[in-house]
Image (cartoon, rainbow, N blue to C red; front, side, top):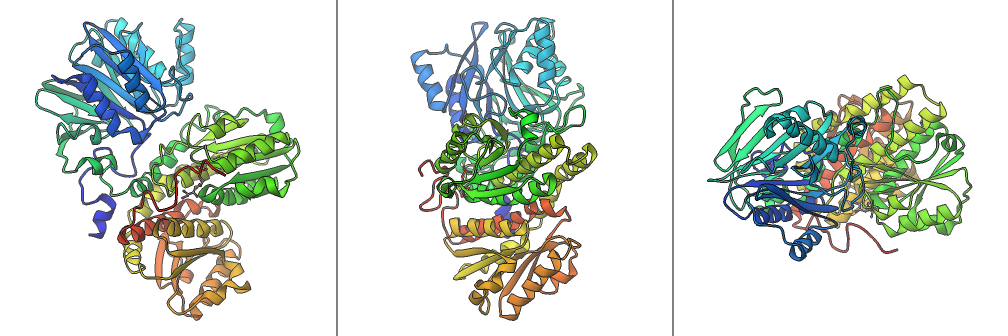
Length: 637
Ligand code: AGP
């Protein structure tokens, strides 16, 4: 029973296995006897949760391609199609976008055209070398109409088709030039009854119909027509026609595929087979972290950040940083303080956004304000930005939503690439915010000369090893799921941590209280003896995050704190490095963590706490994705 919690007892999720889901645009392809417009719009609707910055559709009719695309929600595209109908067709592609490169505008919406409208293409992922390819195409006279990396692939495909290649071979020539993560789906006005796609590090699944076939980012988009599917493997190209499905490797070799039967209902399909979006998003974190790290080191081995529109010379004059955020994002900011101060020696203050401007903060032109926001629309944080800019501070925002208000009102942005976070309780938003904070700290250390290039690259390599270590934690949840089942009647649960473990304790408490409605509180472990220890009574569950061994004396002090509460009857749930015998000795329940550098331990320690909160709330029968009294984005002060 417990194991099914992770996968809901389902087989493959219809995308690559949990934790491996890539970027979160929604893609649909169709060929068959039905009205392609209806099939594609219905499929996009089923996947709108994957991205809703813009939507578009392209169909082949009478030997040419018709395209409609609009920024904003799918409803905008539907309205456009009503006022500007598209001809009937039985062959087409569609896309809902979660913007990564280029804001959510009509021009940046997919599909994108190549060869003067002969081919249309949609894309999910990031093409890391798009700038080089774009420069090459521009030098050859190609005129771009968007800021996207996708349009580069569309023009490469168009030029391959114009050179005389068929659609499959043209796609093969395109993927040979791309680096990064991508699912590409394309149609050619001169290749009837055909849709061709390619995938690398990004989901794509084939829906196998009778006299019709489907392509999609996940099965939710076609499950009402067929429950037979084929999961495509890495570096594969697929050609679908009404009565055939041909799969080959990027190198042209025949490919083995794995057909399977989908036994989900539609609701489960939209959650990738999980019971909650939150649980799905917990397991997406390894891939979300990997995606947020993608493309951050340039060909010279230097750290590069997207949309860092502040001159290096200005960054070198910064003499104070103030991090401003709310809730979970604030907890990420507390962790950022330890890392940025350690690497750059710049003093860092961390403020709750709703407190920031009322404390009359000391801000100069040499102050850098860093805001953190998953939604990019949090009113408290937005008002803090406006206050900071009135005081002539530079503002960098860390955000997960391309084109949101907060990035638009900032001087520079570091985008996380977690994809849409639907569950109100933030999970992948938090861990990808940490990644962005670490990248900012290392970037500042690089431009200010606090760290050598090799030191920075070594730390980035440690970060690049995190997704695998996250998977290790997420593959070993039996103990924490059992613990959740034994916690349902607890009146209160405490969380302790020291150094970067203290914000983890705060975040673990927030996760639990906001979805299970249990009282939970996080404390700095060293602060317990100054009052809160009076709360400790027999059997009180206390989670304790223990720093890595050998971390000065912090580790030993936390082990002492565990003994203090245990001596007073607490039930200690200890999160510590695997093999930490000292910590294990005082643990009623031990949750082992892989070995990582101290500053990066929050990326792993938070995972069992997220899973624990989700499981407690599930077992209590609450709506985990939409807890009472809460909203995903708090756009009021
Ligand atoms: C976290 O689980 C909560 N949903 C909430 O604290 C959230 O982190 C906070 O409202 C900030 O939201 P933002 O990141 O979108 O600005």
